[in-house]
Image (cartoon, rainbow, N blue to C red; front, side, top):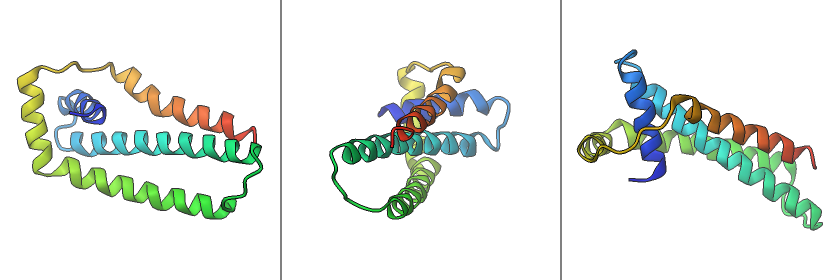
Length: 125
């Protein structure tokens, strides 16, 4: 199981008790936001790095378009991955292995921290 799978099941198991019907939707949304925030952090780092190196790779509007397309692809990939048979198999593995579940506050702080760092990095442009 990957780190994202463990984060997904931590969120899923936390919200399953309160929101039985929407727990999977909330967990897919969380994983998608986390992966998109990490992509944003990586993209902003490379944008600042390449601008400091005076390398002109692509325009800002093309980079934002590419980011939006990648974000939609990430969301649909997660929706397909965690809504089907694979989620049930991973859920069985999680229940069998008793993997560590993380704090809900820490998990929701991760995407916020990534977005905050990305904005700070983009201010250097």
